[in-house]
Amino acid sequence: MPPVSPLPAPPFPTTEAAWFWTAAALQARRDPAAPRPLPGPCQPEDVVKCLDTLYRNRRVELLHVRILRIWGWRGVAPDPRRPKEGCDSRLWQEAMERLDWPLRARGIVTGPRCALPANLLARHGAAP
Image (cartoon, rainbow, N blue to C red; front, side, top):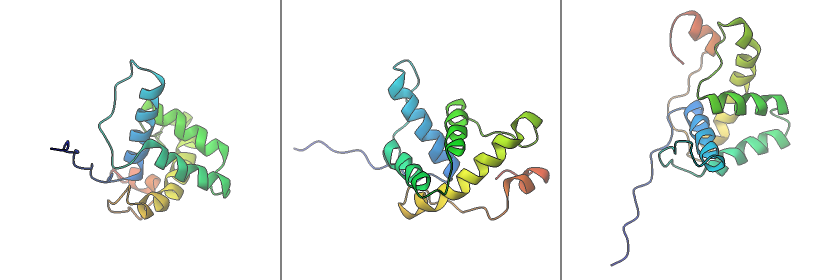
């Protein structure tokens, strides 16, 4: 009898969730002591490939990628209400908006897309 393969993981509800999972999976590969994330609906390379395509097509800059790496490894998004994180938050939001469509096109993210900017949602106390 052939081994039963596990059911595929459901798609991520948001682009941020996909990115945080990817960062955790890549960190776990680099550091054996790091916690391993649960299996996702894709390989971490699939998300990185989408980001690389955006970079090669000049839709994101190297600074966007650096901000995604730094905050992805921290496991939290930069807070626009904190003065020292304002610029990082703007770059993070731009990168998330540009990464959203490629991930949705590949079925990696399927949750509802928020049409309001994160800074407007934060100002009114709503979570994005």
